[in-house]
Image (cartoon, rainbow, N blue to C red):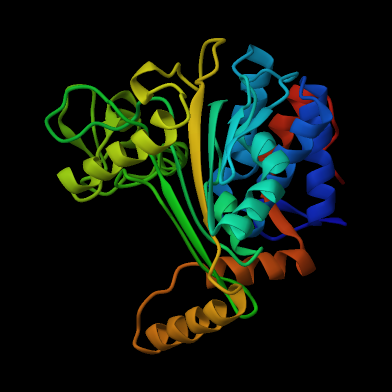
Length: 342
């Protein structure tokens, strides 16, 4: 299915979008397993409405494949370092690929041991971090994920960026599938949001970033030449450091300060991902019901519960298709030689 839409895009069935992305990635040098993993994650982000991690961002991956920042032939190496611990080296490839190969084992180890961890290194960027936690919640587990990247964020008063946006994600099961998904950066806003504002010619809110002189700015173009600020001042910077220790320290990945740029050059950022999976005692059924009932009570009191709107969007997209930015598709097609679905 591919049909035009009143919005500036093209509507694709998820399977059509995934086939297009897979073919384009393979044409640009990714091996089939890597291409399939990234295509799945890209389409999943679009289906949940996270377009900043969708086909527009896929162009960054394609540029990186062509330039060598992603090793298209890389094959992840997975090692069990303890009954409840997996170490993954994606060797200049993609976290999405390494996680796909390890997620079933990680879930099984969590259920056997009560909890299990995955420490991954050697990756480009991790894309939509919430996707990693969500896939464990789909298996009845509570999950936490953290990742770092090249430096984009500096605490207030620090003249240079020292961390990436260093996001965290948390997901929990409910009685009818995942009930909660929190996915947020340590920065006041994600880098892709600022880049998106620059592309649209829109200002950004105060407190998001500084320019190259360190002065506060609401001009996204100036922000891209400067660096991002943490949310909540020093508290957000502390969380960014915590994420850095989990994602890069435990895995042996590059610290953000040492990570090459993900948009230029020929070197992989070589960054890390940490995932914790927790199995409820006695199985997930009782906990899932408790979580679902409690979240309903909170929502009834006016509390915003993150996740359900994304789950509804994903269900609707499975039925009606996803509207993908036409310009992003055309750019991918031009780079890969794969025709845009019509």
